[in-house]
Image (cartoon, rainbow, N blue to C red; front, side, top):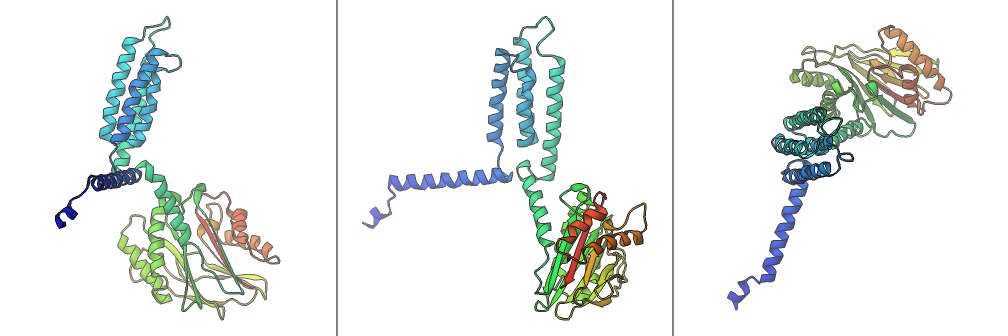
Length: 379
């Protein structure tokens, strides 16, 4: 009886085989989507389209010209590895030769012209370059767009400001250079000290747009890990040391660190070569510059960053920004700050809700530089 119980029935073996086949198929589908799987399925499908297109060309060259062979070649440049791509190119070349042999010349000349051969060859060369680039980078086209979207969303999430208690309002606007999706400006923020303190770091990485996006992503992750893990006065020295260890050719950055007590309104600003902060004093209606002393991040070791102190009273506003908002080749920094504060005065009566985006539009709409603006208001 025990021996009979250990014997596997044909039905059980079939179920096990079916289960294994499902697992293999699922794994192959996941690997193909990620770009890690074999491309033989795509190669076989494209190889079948080549003789089909050649047959259609021979049957009716008016509706299916010889240059139609570029269609599987374009798809192959996006789907296949370089080694598989060469096999498809050999099939396309054979198809062109076959078409030239079978199609009868017309009064205006041969149906397979040198121009057709040049077009197919040029598209094939471009496809080979694309395939070699994908192979060298290691990012298949099926995942490349997803990866860039994920990077952009990570930067956006990391730049999100935490909620503030009643009586406080905060908002931020980021505008990359040239209308791109990636920026060299970023913000990291956290509520520390049991939620009583708001720490915000606004950073401007050297370069702009896509050129600075990869470094901005790396630094935003590192700065986000440092923020709240160190005492406020130790943050910029640690960030400076981290940037020096990267040993980038263009490795400097400017940064401003706000440490705000949400109970009293007292704050400190620590700056690393960053433009000064601006505080609107409700009692006088004037903007005051809050410029702290400190060198650029990533220039030399042992840098010191001296804070400047202030207090946000009811009705006061603190504005932090990057240089793309106020600097230009045809004007001084002071002129850009005057223009920014002049535009900000329009929001004093109605409140600063929604003002960050409108201020960037008003003072630096068409500037070819990354722009970031942060507003902290006390009701």
